[in-house]
Each structure stands twice: as structure tokens, then as C-alpha cells.
Amino acid sequence: MPRETGQKLIAQNRKARHDYAVLETFEAGLVLTGTEVKALRAGRASLIDAFAVITDGEAWLHGAHIAEYTQGTWTNHAPRRIRKLLLHKEEITKLIGTTKEGGLTLVPLSLYFKDGRAKVEIALARGKKSYDKRQDLAERDANREIARAIGRRIKGRLFE
Image (cartoon, rainbow, N blue to C red):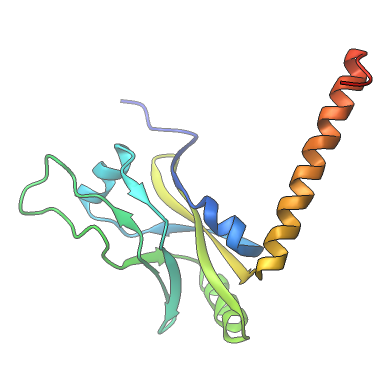
């Protein structure tokens, strides 16, 4: 059987991009049990309330929900257990230094398979204030309106 190649998205945390200003992203591996991998292959995961923490020089993912595997037996996993993240030592020391300064947190953005291995994209992020969110929404709406106007101009319909 050929090895799996490419990327397959399992779950995204869209609200994180709305609530946080992403400064830098990292790709981390996950330490999983067998039933967790099977549940992920079925696409049963959520990153809604998830966050990452670095304790004792190791990175941990808290709050990620991987549903129990339906065909699992007594070996099934706990859906919201704490999972270890696999990062390089340099990345961990960098994250320790940057999260010590105030206002920065580690937020998972997406969970996916890359060449058959489960990966999570975590971001070093700063929380947005409500006026920042409104400004982003207004900017996105303005960009949409500009794109519509350009599209109408290209099609020859100036005013509609």
C-alpha cells in the first residue's frame, strides 16, 4: 500500500484568526494514541477552546476535542485529554521567551495530516480588542466592495 502524501485538513480554528492577531506560526507534531488517529482520519476533531502551554520545557495542547472512536473498545481515549506537542528545542526556547512577555499566547489554528502524520499549526498571537475586530471587518468589507467594482469595470458594466 503506498504511503499517504500531501495535506488533508481535519479541523480549523477560524475564530482564533478573528480574536487574535497572529504574529508567527509553527508546525508541531502530536503524540496520539491509536484510537485518536482513527478518529482524526474520520474527521472528528474540534479546536474551538484549545490553547497551548509550555511547561517544564515541553509544549502541551489543552482543550482540543478529538471525539471517541466509534469502533473503539476499552482502549478508547478521553476526548479532551492533554496532548504533547512535538517541537524543536530551539522553537520551544523561543516560545518560552516570547510567551513570558505579557499579552502573548499560543493558539492552535489548524489540525491536519501531512504525509500521513498528524500535525497542528500553532500561532504565537496577541489578543485583539473589540475595536481592532471592528476595524478588520470594515477593512474586509471595503476590500470586497473594491473587488466587486473592479469586476464590474472589467465586464463593462460601470454602474449597477
